[in-house]
Length: 90
Image (tube, rainbow, N blue to C red; front, top):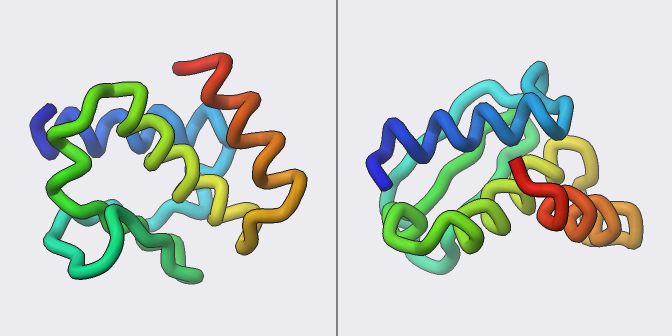
């Protein structure tokens, strides 16, 4: 997947999760210790390795980070929504 295709997928998911107003920036750049992160200011950063995984794995990473725009921790609601959205797909 190209960077542009990946970013488009992030924005499609953001619309589905209704967090597009909280998403300010999407970056793809090398990260030392993780595949993705979400800042409190609405910036999502993904390691370029995410571009090499299949769409299902990419979606797991994308949805996980986007949900952090609504839920800062990995509580019950976060886990339920993650599972639900991934089961529905785009």
